[in-house]
Image 1 (cartoon, rainbow, N blue to C red):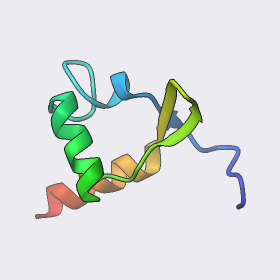
Image 2 (cartoon, one colour):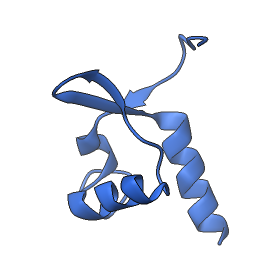
Image 3 (cartoon, rainbow, N blue to C red):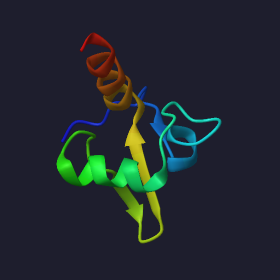
Image 4 (cartoon, one colour):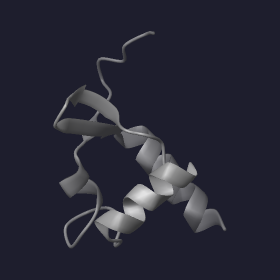
Length: 66
């Protein structure tokens, strides 16, 4: 797998809630991940998960286009 050194990663608190990119609850977010609507997280450790910013922004663009 090729590593993109310029790739930004987001933690869950950057994605959901009042200050997040998506105005949805944690349970809705994880339901969408389970359903395949949102890409699965990258596990950095047992307690740390991140998502690629580019994939989340692509998801938002796709939802806006509907």
